[in-house]
Amino acid sequence: MKTSAWSLACIGLLGYTAPVAAAEGPTAAPRGDWTLVSRSELCSLQRQFGDEGDLQLRMDTFGSRTNFQFTVTGKLVPFKRGSGTDIRLAFTPDSVMREKFPVVHGQIGSRASVTFPTGFFPVLSTIDQALLAPGQRTPAQRAELDRIGLEFVRGVTDISIEFPLREPLKILTGSMAEPLARLRACVDKLNVKWGLDPEARRTFIRDAAPLPETFAAARQALSGLSVPRGITAIPARVRVDEAGRATECVIQTDVGARVSEFLCAGLRGEYTPALDSTGQPVASMYHTMMQIYAQ
Image (cartoon, rainbow, N blue to C red; front, side):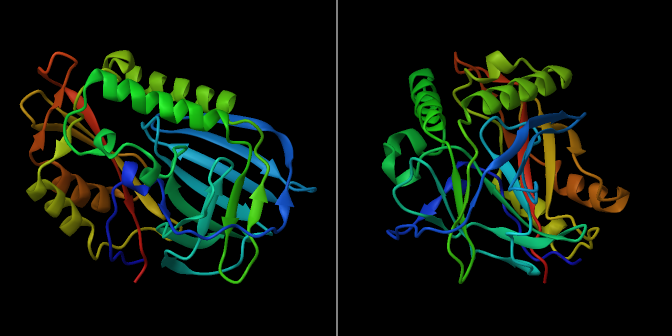
């Protein structure tokens, strides 16, 4: 499959909105408990829904505590190929449907699937924009964003997904507070394994980020590459030292040696380093999720 676009998993993907209320449609009740899967580069929550367990919701994270890759698979997902921004989504506390999610439609086994990045956070337009401004954030601003996120999670008991020409599908997740706490604890363990202090990272006033030329090089590296069929996103992590140099690049899913080499060649550029709570540059990790849009 040829790729034709690039996307970063970031707070901006948490939801675009339009003032459109959700209609009523089918519901999928849980069948069994949440299962936490932990691997060397991945933490994942998975659960079956529907009378016969014919719908699966999976939330993957490759190091982020806030941004996840959602995959919904099963009979209630329409068969379709390709990518676009054609689904709408709402969490329980939302008053409107979120729109324009970059989604990839596909198939897992014999079942249709849809994959998209999002996170459990309020619609961005409802938050003090000073908290979302790029650049440094004070410890107090970080704490406030954490508080907003935790409060939102406590209110989530279902997720509604609307496909084109269909009524919204409501997935009755139940409270997400405890499952997400387990998922984030798993992410902390990944950070420890990678040689990072997760508690210290949460006090940083600035995270590591690529300079524009590094971003452009990575985007160019992705453009036109052939990736294995079924790959809808390529997660990567880059260790960035206190001087802003990329010292390690890991492609966190199996896309083959050639693709990994090309992508890491683009990502091994210059970065703005992370700043700790005192404003000093420190070594950290940059995470990105490169969305694959088929040509």
